[in-house]
Image 1 (cartoon, each protein chain N blue to C red):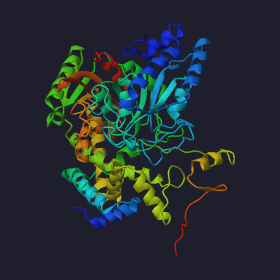
Image 2: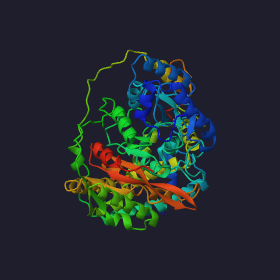
Image 3: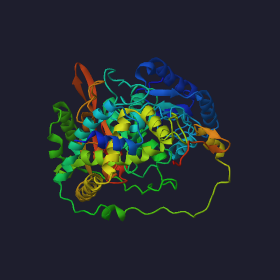
Image 4: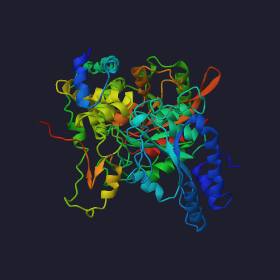
Length: 97
Length: 469
């Protein structure tokens, strides 16, 4: 059973506002889902998680160069933003006391 | 009157190029269906306002003898694939008015053909769901029986094809979201090999599982569409391409018996047996195989997927794009924006993922799930040394009624046969081969075939020989 305290911690980590009753209802749903996935404990697994597919994947590299001309996407980016100020996206104060 | 029920890309191409009819005439028939049915079905969230211009461009190419395979062909696009300058919302309120700032690679590939982009198709919000009931813009109804769901999350894409509102559509498949709605709506749904189709421009849900897929009325059209959208892309580090291996005269099909029989709907099981008989009559060999790890696929999926979701969804914070709900401080800007603008199913999966990845639980859940995933990959690789393809029903049931699966876990169980192909990365197709009867209505059910990586042509080869009902 996930406690309300733990749910509140998760809500903070997730950056999501929940009412208390939403959190309670979600805790019940999560308990049932987590109860279902716990069947994985039936499996003995010493398999190294990275061993097999590590050899199938390769890194995709490119030169560390800027390829687009300065300002090319500025207007598009600013047009998408909810709040802008000059050529900046405006947000509330980041650093706290 | 063009018979849209039997129309194929090839026959439309022939008729358009030979001037039997014009792009305008073809598109108008689809628009008529949209006008008559979309209010109720809600397959499309938006019909694009520039269809007339697109029609003109396509017709000019045809008149100049420069048509390509899809020139003038009506196509619908799932609301999570970016088309430059057009609204794309992932059926969510959090990016309700977001205009795409670039074309997805699949769209770039399609634009070379000048098809007619009809509109954006409804989906479960951020592709999280199995019924399209979690769209923030209303449900989509199954055109076969409007009391029932079209499946999800690509429910709008499947319904649009089934209701002749587009000849072909694109969807996305993370745990079954192209194949299951294809099965529910009676159309063909393909989930390509992971990496064979670029994810650049697909709004990410679960990055190790997501694949853009195709929906169509017949197998050849899915094959055509797949060949156009696939390809290695430098903008997608997981993309890859491999030469097709060539077809076989006879295939060996494996059936994981123990996995299927547990609690299966009897009608669906009977339909599946009929399909196996059909494949035997076609000359293929049907054998029983044992894959005991398959029964854990949903558990693995419902740990890995929410974990990746919790990470991918963090970009929706009201800062750089989308809606912003103002709070007292920066933290509240985040939490109010996400709290108010995200649907409950999305929030549920974010919370699950956050839990599975949090310290103290990471090993027990996420790490464990990855280990089992690797074990599954190894086991299936071994099985594919001996057989060519795996056959399964696409879904344990036909389309369920709207509102029937309110319990989240119950809804998740409908992915039981489809999630494994996403975990493995293998291509899989759903073909509408049979119908089962429910309350006097005949509902489609799909046969699912799973092939080894990059063996889509084997899937097309067998499934093309079925009579599509």
